[in-house]
Image (cartoon, rainbow, N blue to C red; front, side):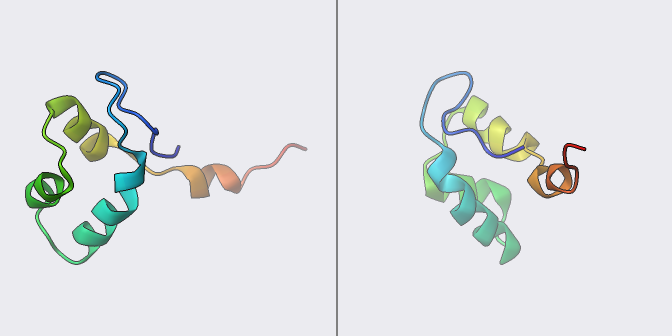
Length: 65
């Protein structure tokens, strides 16, 4: 739903980097260069960012009845 605060595999804090990553991608920067600039070197952290699907808006449409 939302980006985890820490990487699932190595435990590195990555949650604070998500917004800046999204801004860089929206401006047209290559994903590899954006992750390099943010200091995401491990493949587990990179995979977390590449594979993340933001579903918070979709889940917010449903409510308990």
